[in-house]
Figure 1 (cartoon, rainbow, N blue to C red):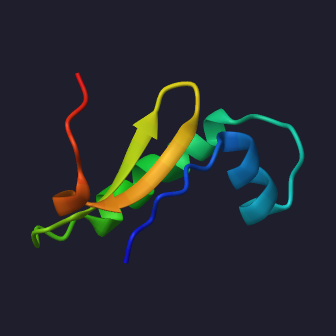
Figure 2: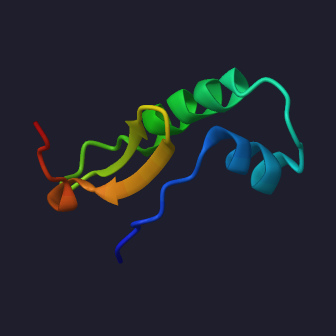
Length: 68
């Protein structure tokens, strides 16, 4: 399954917690906790990638591409 969509912190606040505006750093804390919970040591791993200035994206490790 491909997960191409990037969600901003504001979108996550709105869709997950039904909040508009507010402290988007809360999202960062929850993403950090999710990353620890989904890291089960099995490969390919499900990753949550931070896209600077855009938000977060979930993808499988095998789908990851290097950008330089």
